[in-house]
Every structure is written in C-alpha cells, then in structure tokens.
Amino acid sequence: MLCIETKDLRKKYASTLAVDGVDLQIESGQVFGFLGPNGAGKSTVIKLLTTLISPSNGKISVLGIDSAKHPLEIRKKIGVVLQQPSYEPTLSAEKSLEKYGMMWNIDKKIRKKRTEELLSAFGLEEIRKKKMDDLSIGQRRRVQVAREFMHDMELLFLDEPTVGLDPAARRKLLDFLREQVKNSGLTIFYTTHVLSEAEYLCDNIAIINNGKIMAVDSPSELKNRFGHEKTIKIHISKVSEELKSKLSKIPECQIKLEPEPTVIINSTKSEIILMNILQILNETETKINDLSAIPTNLEEIFLKVVGDSN
Amino acid sequence: MIQINPIIRLVNRNLTISINPGFIIWQILFPLIYIFVAGFAYTSLIDSVPFGGKNLDYPAFLASGMIGFNIMNSTLISGIIIWNDRRHGMFEQIMSGPFTRTHYILSNIATIGIIGLFSAALITAVGYPVFFDSVEFNIVTIPLIIFGSVVGAILFGSIASIISVKLRSSEGFNVIINTVFLFCAFASTAFYPVQGAPQPLATIFYLNPLSYLVDIIRAGIFGQVTDFVITEMLVLVALAAILFVIATKLLTKLDF
Ligand SMILES: Nc1ncnc2c1ncn2[C@@H]1O[C@H](COP(=O)(O)OP(=O)(O)O)[C@@H](O)[C@H]1O
Ligand SMILES: [Mg+2]
Image (cartoon, rainbow over all chains, first blue to last red):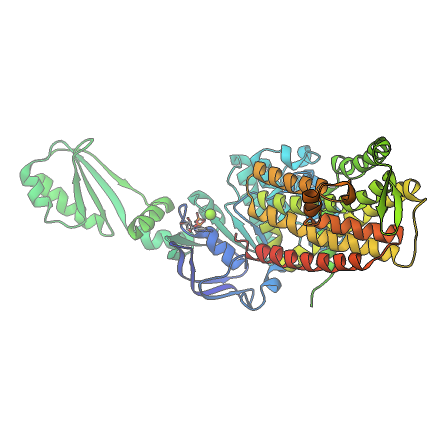
C-alpha cells in the first residue's frame, strides 16, 4: 500500500518557494530518508504531510486519507517528532511520557508498562525524576522521541531527531528505530542532513534541494546510478603551455595549479579519459607524481546532486 | 460534532501542568490574607458601603469582590498555558496529534472555568463568616455566581489568550499581562466602592469589565438584582463573546 502520496506539492511563503512541486510515492513498512541541506524544505514537507500547514498547491494523501478533507483522521494515526524541541517544562521525564500517553487515550496499565520500556530503551532511567526544564538539550530530545512511542501509530515522522545526541545515543536511537520497523511494520519518514545516518537506516532516500526532489532511490541504487562517475586525480610536476592546449580538447577534465599542479577527471567514463590523458602526459614529457581514484560514497553523490541543482 | 473526550484529556493535562504550590498560594492564600488583613484594617476608614438597597460592612464588600478578582486571576492560567505551549513547542505537538484547534481552545476555557469556579467556591466558603450577616441567599445566588465564573473566565481568558498570542518575549508577556490584570483589579469596584471615588475614577471603574463581574456576584450574594445588574450581565456577555471570537480567530491563524 502507498503510505504517502503527493502530487505537485507546493508551499509558498511570502517570497520563498519552500516546496516546489514535490511528487512522492512512499510504500509502507520502510524507513524513508529525506535528505537535504539546511533550508532545502524538509521541515516544510513534514509540516505539510502532518497537516500542520496546508499546501499552496497540490494534493496529499497519507495512509490513504486525503489531507485536505480529513486532517484529524490522519493525525490520529501518525506520530510526529518535529525539528524544534517540545516539552512540558514543569513535568519530570517520566511524567512527560505518562501524560503524553494519557493525551493519546492509552489505557493506564499500558501507559505504565510503555513508560518503563521506553525509559530503559532510551537510557533515561537515571533522569526519570528530573524536571524537563533541568535536562540537557540531548536528554530532552531523547524524551521527545521516546514519548512518541507511547501511542500506537502506523506512520512516524522524525525531523532530524538525532541533532544534539552524542554518538552512542545516536546509534542507540537508529537501532531502536530499525527494530520498530522490523517488528511492528511501522513506516518512518526520516529527515536528516547527515548522510551516514541515512545510509545506515534508510531503505530508500530522496534527496531534496531548493524545495525540489533531485533523486529518489535505495542507497545502493543511488550509488550505482551516480557511482559510475569517478574522480581521478593526477598530480604532475609542471604544467606547460603545450599540455594546457592539448588537455583543453578533452572534455570532463580540468587542470588545477594550486596547491600543486593536478589534472582532475570527473566523468562516468573516467577510465577511457584517463587513457587519453596518460598519452598526452607522455607526449609532453610530463612527470606523474601521484595518481588517485576517489571511490564514490553517498556523501559525494549528495554533494554532487545538490551542487548541480544550485 | 465536537467530541468531548479529547477536550477532557487536554483539560487533564492543563491542570497537571499548571497546578503547583506557587499557583495555589497565589490563588488561595493571597485573597484570604487580603480579606482578613485589609478587610478589617480598612473598616475604621470605610464604615459601610451602600449596595443596592443595603449597607454592607467593608469586609463583606471586600470578600465578595475578592470572588470576582479570583475568577479574573485564575484566567491568567489560560494565557500562561498558551504562551508556554508556544514557547516550548507543545502547541505544534498537540496540533499534530489527535486534536483540533477547537479542542485546544475549549479545553483552555474549561480549565479556567474549573479553576475559576473552584476558587470562587473557596473564597465564598471562607469569606462566608465575613459576609454572612448581609447574605441574602435566594434562588439566583448560585446561578449568578456560576454565571459570573463562566462568563468572567471566558472574558478574561480571552484577554489573556490575546496577549499570549501577540507577545513572544517572556519579559513582554509578563509585563503586559501583569499590568493589564493589575489595572483591572485596582480600577474596579472589587476592592473599593464606586460611591467614594472621584468622578473620573468612577467612570474608569465602569469601563472595566471586572466591575461588572463583581457587581453581578455581589448582587447574587446580597440578593440585590436590579435593572442595572441585568444590564451589566448583558454587557458582560456581549464583551465576552466579542473577545472570545477575537481570541479564537488569532489562535486559528497562528502559523507554525
Ligand atoms: N514560516 C515560514 N515563513 C517564511 N519562510 C519559511 C517559513 N518556514 C520555512 N521557511 C523557508 O522555507 C525554506 C525551507 O525551510 P525548511 O523546510 O525549514 O528547510 P529544512 O528543514 O530543509 O532545513 C527556507 O528557505 C526557510 O527560510
Ligand atoms: Mg528542518
């Protein structure tokens, strides 16, 4: 079943087009990563999908429900952890979970049980009696994420949930999320600007920039698709005029003089171009100091996709 | 159809987060001390206060005024809840959950209604020895006190909500809300009879909704429902309705 479907989704703020024609088709039972730099439009898309704001244009269907017609029906079935902190300053961590469960109409017994489970899963036992106001940003964030698991849901939105968490807590959270998806068939819509997280956690990733989706695929497919493009760097001893003019005839290659003379090839056919260049270097009697090929990781794909669209 | 359950759950949460020792002291102890200390201290200055066709002791006058004052004061809660919810991201969180803005607004009104009624009942009970000489309980006493609690809660709750929606900084919010409420408290007939006030002040007293509220409550307690009190009730309802509509509009338009 399609869990989230949008058609030509747009959101315009006074002068910015925060979301610019987004089409999404997300299957349930997976972690869907929404990856993009700051200001790309990730949070705005989450607010649109969770019915907090309404679109300037386009259609949204979440869990098969039309968001313009029945927003409350959608909200009853989803969980949301927004980017900004959200907490009751006067309540303890434990009471925050408890009361949140109450607000979601969860039976008292189940509430108690879940509170204990979540305090333990998120490593919050030691601070359970502390007031939210007195917690650190990372601790508050953990309570905020844990709290969302007090109620049942079919779809969970997480907007950069790991910001402010230390590496251990971050890993613990990602593993917890994976577990939830595996065990309960939950679908997670996960935004982040941290690539390693998306690669570790997500089944599929959409890369968004300037309110537009640049690419959607699984991490391995993304690598496959853009990964043919390799970067090869040849460090050389000197750059002669002859070399310059000969290299200028070869596309997808450039010469850099600083910090040391380097020829850079960036192409899907890097190997073939490399052959040509080696020949030219030979003809012009240019000495090669070093040669390196940089393997493609998701980070480069990301920077390239985002860079191209800018 | 508006569901009741989500509203009850929000009221439960509102009461949990707002009731703390500081608040209870402010709500209960302050009025009591004021009734007994100021009430009796000023008796030597203010001998008796004419009200309707009656003359009241000053302590009786003050204790009954205190009920209205406490209803107004308890509505500060609504402003504080809204303001805190926005500041700490709970407004967005609630609005992305199984609630609507109508649930949110009605739960706030219900919360201050409950706190208002509770403090009105408390002051009535404790103030009773002070004003029981002049009390004329009758069929409209309790309805009038309840009317005052509910309409007053809506009216002042809307004012507090409007201020909390309009102000984001904590200093601004505290200064404005305290100034408005302090002005309402002291430029009213809650503590001081209009008969003794100079003309300009008397006019200001009757530009202030709290004066209407305390008049209505006094009319209930002392059995003096005159035509003027009925006019006051109409004005109070109209004003509460207008302010409620404005507050609701503002809350509905709040952007995320
Ligand atoms: N309420 C708002 N009013 C005006 N502009 C906004 C508002 N919210 C977001 N924007 C703008 O929309 C763009 C996308 O923002 P956002 O969705 O928060 O990005 P991201 O979450 O990817 O960092 C940004 O340029 C931001 O400045
Ligand atoms: Mg964001």
